[in-house]
Image 1: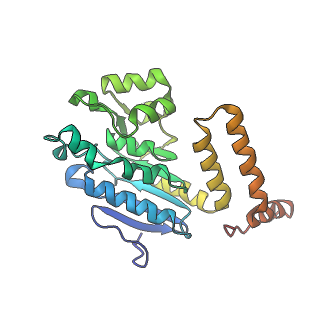
Image 2: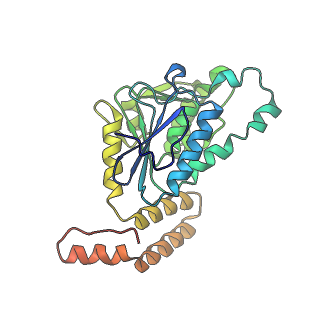
Image 3: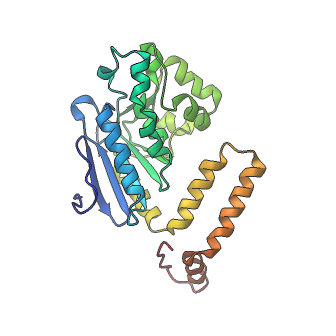
Length: 265
């Protein structure tokens, strides 16, 4: 896999590669700090996701921390002496919003630790693939603090109140098998999470981009709406897709028993 220098190239500590058509791979690259999320890495990740979201050639984005660790949490060295006003002025929520608002599928490939902010980073993805060594947790309570980037909210929505509170109130860690059983991850890989995450990205990248984007948007925006409002949102998106060339191509290809050629239009 090689970096395409003609596209956006993020600064260290983040690597951008294009391992296949329509696929972007972002790799956190602070191995000496176990990929702890300092402000520079948060900013680089947000900028990269925004740039890839605007790149018409990109259909799916994979976020990895490499083969040994995903992200061990926030960089506590930046917080040890911080007061409330200093923490507020960091405005880290703007960097998380770039991920939450991304229109393209985000896939987290998790090997090793995904703790605190690292677990919250994975929870911002649409799909999570856990490698054999993956361990998830929100251990902030053991430091006298609490999750501050959606951990209390996204974890409850993913797992339900009682499973989420067990992790949040005790700081317990769960491995890949338990995470899969709880519904915290989409799949468990036999070994390294990255090959399976890239295979999922490749599969999605071959599908009609407009339909993929509408599915993601409706699932995201409908989650907090009353059922009737969410169903209306779904119907409108379904109807809108009948104005796309890909919808015509998909149905015609199915009836003709041939492979469709989607153009993203």
